Length: 329
Image 1 (cartoon, helix red, strand yellow):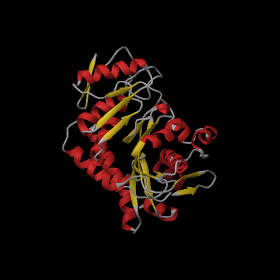
Image 2 (cartoon, one colour):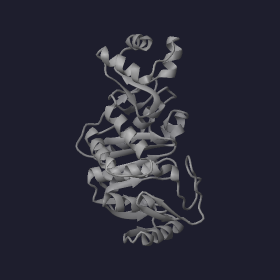
Image 3 (tube, helix red, strand yellow):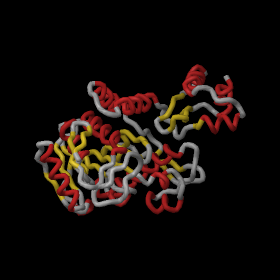
Image 4 (tube, helix red, strand yellow):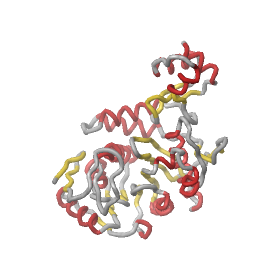
């Protein structure tokens, strides 16, 4: 079976294909639920002007092939499974592309690139240090163990990510800040520093893009929890470039991607967000339209925006009593 995704053609052997959520563990798989993840990857790579890209967990090779064809980068493909190695070779031939394909354990790799991409099954934590070592400037990370990152298991979160969290109404952003904290800590152990360029959540995964650079480490302790990243999660100049590139293209998922970029560009740089359903219950009041609530707060002189982490979330620096006043109109 041959599928088309973006500008890539992919020949699929008899492997699990899922329409939503994480694919089942297998020696090789293709997950169409990650299509937007890969589309955003090509846009960010173009916006950053990436010259070399290491696809550390390449599976069918679809991500790397799209990066070659849509972002113009040179790509090194790697997957530890022998079946994946042959699938990548076949798909490169199908797309008339020549590229290096490796069949090694990721943590044994010696091939560096300007951007190293880590997209494993489950937690990326065991591979972060190696990814930072192989990265010449940028690191991209996908995490699908979102239940742990979102506070469902404090013990596992501490074991994997070095900090304790609990379930909160802004759990998706909390998970993003935990991931950023862990990447920053791993980088510090290697004598490096990182800053997030774009971190977001979709369906079953978190995705983050990081730059290795001379920057401040922004970590804070949250009451009742451990340390998390407290700085910005997005570089708005990079997002503007990615959005402009997207506007000139036609591709599946374009509407979702551009709305995500626009929302991230408008997002207030505060830690956490309020869930309007929770506020409605707390204030015992009918909830207004979210955009109306944002505008009321802005009219009162506060920062306010929607958030990329929840369709029911609002970010603001307004105190709770002012939020209640705006909520009630």
